[in-house]
Length: 473
Image: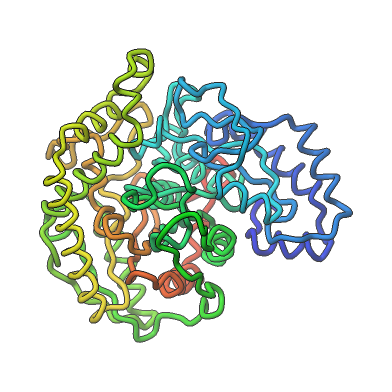
């Protein structure tokens, strides 16, 4: 049952072959066995209460796709009656009175909330540790990071404590942990999963919610639950049929390989080799792969990204820096982001937005030639869990706490759909992933490439040693 896809599990529940109470019992046993080592799930609910809730569904006619399936929501999403901390000691005891939109849609689909998934404090950075719950560890090596900010979600999936999970992605927060934990993480086209109608909903277009899973079909089905217009926010996207063409294959598709962006993105040894091997396999599957020179200056992308990101951090989190009591309880990286934003002029923000617009136009022309472009999902292998962040790559110093994740911003900056697919394991038995990036709105096309890849490789079925697997085989 723990190895089943969410699609197969849901079908079994709907056919009354498996009862929700049986699923819950398996989930709780796995959490009891492994979560103490991994620390993926936090704010876990009382097992007896959860079993009672699951039993109450045993004789209920299944409604939504997630009916009776245990689910842990990312701890950046407000959940009614279930502690939501954002990894901050300021909100260590905060219990929301209402659900965020994502949580409401998951509940409506029948999910049984059992816990939250761990995150970095305020979701800042791609390593999931915070002063409230501590660090999430990688199921493939407990001494290593599970990535972030959806690190708890990715580790929970890899450890077979979860069947599917939600996440969010501003700067690779779905793609980085998916790569580190040998699962799939999909950042959808911006606007496909709408934001909540709180704060700024016009300028804040860098982050989006999205799905994580061990199969691409599960990704598509969960995205279908999360997606759909919110009439209270602008820029709606029509929801495509994500399942209709999922098995179309990749024969004849044109894929552009961007590598390390002409040397702009330093990579630890072995990462480019893993992606090269994956692309050779895609060629054997019928795709046409072509190496590409950098289509846009990397430093301009970085300048635009850091400017707009700092603006949004200052706008949404200013009180954390200006209130002395809150400042004392906030990590320095977040304070730095806010202070960077508070120094910006309107002209600086405008210039950053112009760069962003130019990159969007360049990318649109690129997709006239290619069905997808490809980059590594991370520039480093999973690093020691006791680090705050990697300070250098191959001897090249990282000048900010997030520079080591620069490879994800070409897609993030302009809201392109980007899927991190597993590409196997390095010399130390650690996982890595590769981003498949499509044109704006072609979420179904990107998922179809991922589906073909999954059917050919099934990398997530290589369980971590923690869950009885052996990645050396």
